[in-house]
Image 1 (spheres, one colour):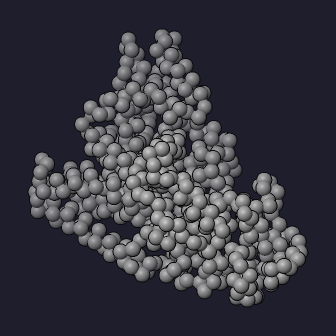
Image 2 (cartoon, helix red, strand yellow):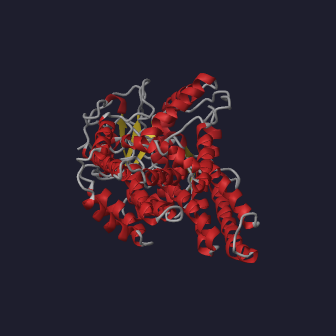
Image 3 (cartoon, one colour):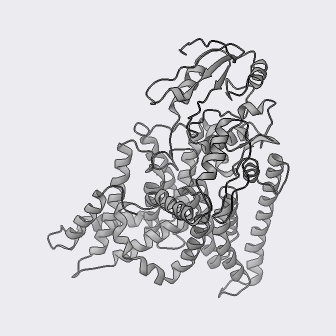
Amino acid sequence: MLPASPYPLLCVILLCLLAILPVFPSLSVARKADRAVLRFANRRALPIFLLFLGVILVRLALIPTLPIPVPGIHDEFGYLLMADTFVHGRLANPTHPLWVSFETFHVNFVPTYSSSYPPAQGVFLAMGQLFGHPWIGVLLSNGAMCASIVWMLQAWIPRRWAFLGGVIAAVQFSVTTYWMNSYWGGAVAATGGALALGAMPRIVRNGKTRDALLLSLGVVILANSRPWEGFLFCSPLALYFLWWITGKTRTKIPLRIRVRQVLLPIVGSLFLAASFMAYYNYRLTGNPLLLPHSLNINTYITGPIFLWQHAKPPLHYRNATFETYYNGWVRNDYRTNLKDAFAMTKQKIERSGPFFFWGAEWPLLLMVPFLFRDRKMRPLLAILIVSVVGIFVMVWGWPHYAAPVLCIVVVLLVQAMRHLSTVTLKGRPVGSMLVRVVVALLLFEAGLNAAEHKCDKTDWMCGELDQRAVVSDQLNALPGKHLVIVRYYADHQVRNEWVYNGAEIDSAKIAWAREMDAEQNQKLLSYFRDRHVWLVRPDEYFPAERLPKPYPFPCNLSGHEEHTARVR
């Protein structure tokens, strides 16, 4: 994957030349800085805590250039509905009597009104909402991700390098990415992967119950954030764990200790977690074995999920937007042929390449052969390969799908830096200088993105519905309650969806509804007869600089003249 700009690569080449020339300045200052960082990073708990706090403080300091994100992607609203449901003390909401008017993406309406996604991300967003804003939960999850990655790395590599890995995770995968600047990132799943992978070598060395419970916590987080990718990630770990618990590997821990302090706590905690997950499924879908996401797929999606699957017969949907999205875009993007399979693979690489790698990493590629020769890295490489293959056989793919293996990516990056740092040329520590160059350019690139107000390296992963937010703010400033009916045109862009609501539709100040046929519209108006009613036509208001104008209209939508009135 080539860098988006040639400048990072040119900087690497230039500084590499400087590193090998005898005119390069003395490294005494760098060595002094190294010793100071080393004294700090060699501590066990302090770097973890300070990185957790530092990620949050740095992102808060960037609010003038990167404001608090406004949700704009379909998935974000699904997670926000889940968080609002949890805040209201429920796992699911009762189906609204007029749910057809509120039907939207990634939300189930029958047998309950609830998000289709696993609950882990919603838990963090709910925590943030309780503290004042759901984005606070995003901050906490990103801080937890970076801190857990440092804790994991301390079990695999020396502590000073572990802290460097945490800094890389914060700069490359958090502060200026959609994982931090949206509501649908992968920080929660990445935390689960780091906890599981960091606990495993500690269990093998010490056999402590604390580490067994942390392993279970990581597995539970993965099962409730990225179930498929979590299964791929945990399968090799489970095989290695069984190999160790049965004494097939050399260990000084007696069998009775392994069973009492490790196996029983893991089995007990996973049983409790599985019981809750079954209850959660039952409350949302009516079936303890039916995931909400599976219910949503069965209800709406007829396109293939994996590359080897074929499309089902098309369904008839209740509104034109769903027809366009599910019978058009979803079915046509992949048509189960070799050409489309290669196209989807290329698309995954283009989406994830810039996220996981930055332009200055080129010198680290020279160290890849050493990673495969490093026996300690082979189990991590095995987990990474299994997980990546499992992700690539899916039709869809975004960077947060690979969130469980982020910790492995960081381990391999830092291990490559360790190998590179040992390279010398005529007695000069060229390798260590190159490591500094790579890290410095990463920091420079992240700072440049923040200065340019880039919330992510892609164009739309943290896209915002500014117009909807403007309308919402205007209506919230008016007295009374409001019903907003959204009218889309035939050429409507399905990504620009406005119809989303919270857990309490009837008591909400603003209820967003989809324009349907005259009979359904009349039912809606009669049900919400005590509200101010507005008609919004989002497709008329592009480009985004122009402010949208909500319109009040008579009760009968068919054939009546609409009277224009700007919301003040």
